[in-house]
Image 1: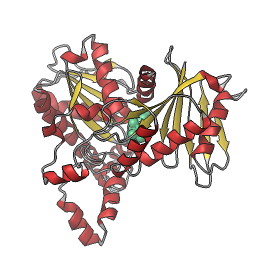
Image 2: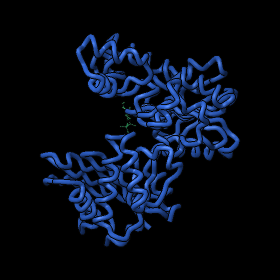
Image 3: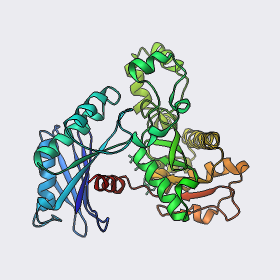
Image 4: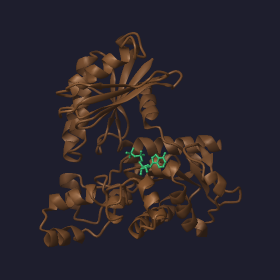
Length: 397
Ligand code: ADP
């Protein structure tokens, strides 16, 4: 069977068609600027040239229709007929406290996703639009929702409560939820598999360092703490997000710069992090590395502050886990950036971390990068959220 994996944003849609038996990606692609002038579909069929289709796309229905047409196209398609798609798996950002695992979508689930939009106003409505567009274009095909928050639902209360009046939790469900759950789950499971161990016997820290970045503590196969919170803004310094800061800064900057709370929130989400700290060099670590090589001091400060924060989080998760067996780096920066991995590992030398630097330099491969006598196993484990979504979708059938 083929499973179509959909990650729908407000004006974009990413997809992969995965063969469930071989787990091969048959085609993947991206639709951008849906509902905006300049709509474009970039379709990458396996073993064939990529195709770029520029045509107006008024809404997500039209985008999904074009994706399906591309998948069955006689020249750049990868399947003969739509009936080969046995299921669709949707990445849904917020599952609140309602969803602690993936579910098949029905009307009640759609209503829940809609209600949870209060907690993820930028994401859940877009995810729902994608679900509806697929239902319309592929009637009768089972659809599953795989929630970014679900894996973190095992956190104990002491890890998810904030030190604010309890009534805000009761009235508005203000608590830590955590995100990137599909990746934390996949990477921790894969790390155990690579080591030939049972995840139930391990204390694993997963560092998902991408554009968005989060860390989680996985004990005996379950998440016990994670760095993102009510929203993805909390925790690590990210590409453009601030991560943790003194909440009083919001009010202070708002007053000084004459900005509303909403506007300060935008600064913290879009103009901060590596981009902001580097004085506007870039949110991309490749640009930061290049700027540092040219002697840019702010870029250096951004990198150092970033690594220090990651290391502090990892060390704090020794408390959450009662020790650490494995630290696994993943996502764009975690898989590719040696300097970040090295700096972070060096901070943790006091815990007995010893890296094999030749291995730590390898990029984008599954690798054990610590020495045999290191007290903690350092690993690089490339994430694969789409495959994880396809597997979970299939399991639900
Ligand atoms: P997203 O959260 O958007 O999925 P990614 O996981 O792709 O983000 O991570 C983006 C970051 O990863 C960027 O800062 C980029 O510098 C870094 N990155 C991605 N690919 C590479 C690469 N091949 N070499 C070095 N850095 C990379």
